[in-house]
Length: 142
Image 1 (cartoon, one colour):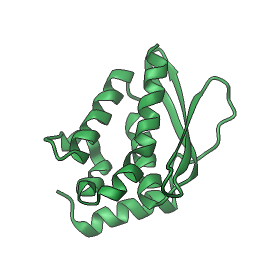
Image 2 (cartoon, rainbow, N blue to C red):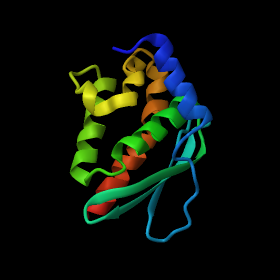
Image 3 (tube, helix red, strand yellow):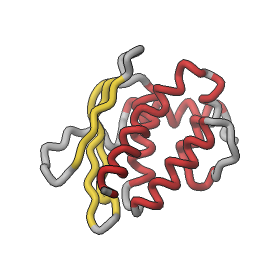
Image 4 (cartoon, rainbow, N blue to C red):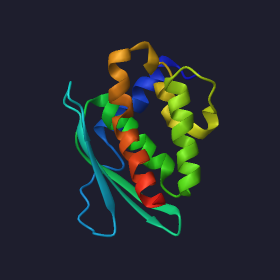
């Protein structure tokens, strides 16, 4: 389990300086828009897959700290992975959010959200981008 201060630093860093925030105009990317009906979270996630491997994942829009940081971290985690590996990472994240046993090693910085389940009203913030990434994976699997 991560120290509370380290978690805060990870979240603030990914919120203030997201690695993967960018609008993509390239038609070789698929995109999915996802927004919350109860807060400011309104993002679009872009993904490019070649030969069953995620070669790039980006997002753009407006989101709270938890939304932006969790989406940015998940973009880092799934890029370079096969669709199957990415689905496993996402499943581990959901297990963590649902208070089920999960593989901490698979989640790296996403472990910063390991107590998100304690704030039920913030779970949507911490999963809105992940749902979009998951939906894009399903689109590529069709």
